[in-house]
Length: 73
Image 1 (cartoon, rainbow, N blue to C red):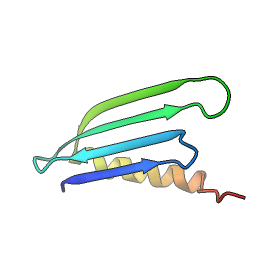
Image 2: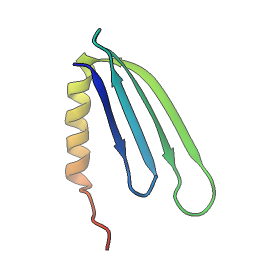
Image 3: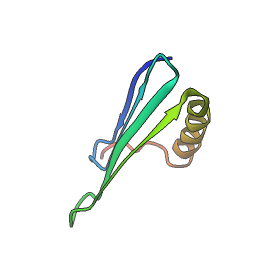
Image 4: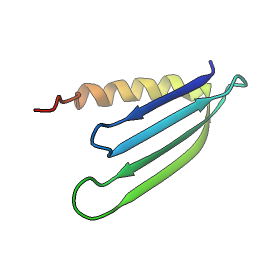
């Protein structure tokens, strides 16, 4: 696999990007922001490889199952 995947929340609270290279390595970067009220931002980045992507996708599916997407009212 190679390419880029991005997850951005409408509220601007979370932005995650995964860039995978043809070599099997990847870089995950993102920002978690406090929405409303004071300013607080957590920026993160780490290297990964494709052996961890499958487990991360399974974990994300579990999170989304527990906290499903809400539509704006």
